[in-house]
Length: 423
Length: 150
Ligand SMILES: Cc1ncc(COP(=O)(O)O)c(C=O)c1O
Image (cartoon, rainbow over all chains, first blue to last red; front, side, top):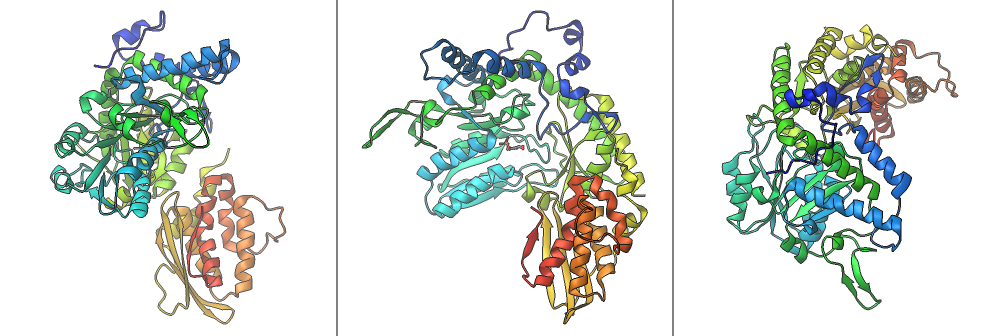
């Protein structure tokens, strides 16, 4: 169970208690009031990054206004304040993921850095020539390229779990890929390009039966579903703050303590040591061993405020609300002639990826932008999965809990306009 | 506010739907590939150079309306022209789509390619409009490699 966040008095209004209260929630996000080309912004690019609520913006401002200081190294008042705010965020993240220990929570720059940390530290120390790393056909480039770099360095092999035409992983194939040369499985929980929610829990159990650890790319999962790393039993879980209402440049790598203990540091520098002489350096204990240098303190504190905000609404409620939106959006888009949805898995979250007959996604994106509608057009940093579906690019509308049914109607209307331009 | 119809002019849409010289060129003695990693556009430009003269030119590939129409109209504009004329035309075209018309190139002489002037109002689409031209330049230089808009 994910503990519900502390409730701030007066911030839970009546309609939040009755329905989802999306109109009230929208008031929390200043950027949603922006007008684009004279039209109200319809922000449907949440898989790229989410908007930030006022409480996060204010929290970061307050840090810079009255708490700014370096952490872990001052004996003075401000440093103590900053350190407390920083470390209390670590504990909040631990709660958010239901991790067992604070020391299993490592602050990174984002998902990408979390995965690279594992590839460098775990990968380089454990993977040898002939060993294998298993990934899936729907990975983001950030969960492909670090493993390819490791492959080049170590002479290892990359194995890829295939997907079916709906965009679901083929689990029998996956099971067949696992063997005594497999050193790690690295798989995304939710696909940013297709929206597929992968059955990571049974996949982790399958790998563990053979003693293989599993890294979960949680970039698209953390904003949309309640994550419990102990229940999943994943060995690593990486996500980014900026897709979860937090600032850019901050992310989390969760790792099981015993694994992290056994891994060499990623980067060297201040904070990650306990004693340095020119002959020998003693590394600091977890999590500091993996946090070299002055971190993004404001980012960490802002992320803490973001998670608190999201917890206050509650991920189970968010997931239920977004599931309804996704079903409605799927229905609206399916009714548009010549539109094909890419990614039709039974288990999906918040992503509507599609192509229009004879119209390139880039043109769709430009025309929708003129209607104030922000979507993403392109390969979504997942070129291999685009190739799998035989399309160079898709248009992608990705949802957040502050989106509305009316915005999806605006999208459908905008798409009719796109078709008109090309008629 | 920039107007969509400035970008998606009928001529452009027509070249997108019915691209001219859209085939491989068997007599080609120069060829280059270009791609725009941002949107996945890919193009191959084929040239049949006779001395300094572009005897024939064609292209293949997949792309958005702007990049495909630009490639189509480029091939139509360049058949029978010299390398030097092609270079000059590219310079003018580039200045027009990037909105730097105060540059050194004389804006006259773009002819039908003027329909791409709306692109300058859409900075993210400049790469789409110029991909074919960058690829052409690579083919003319005979480098034969792949050009990328990044
Ligand atoms: C599934 C997935 N993995 C990884 C990433 C990389 O996240 P970041 O760029 O924040 O490091 C993203 C972001 O687009 C993503 O969607």
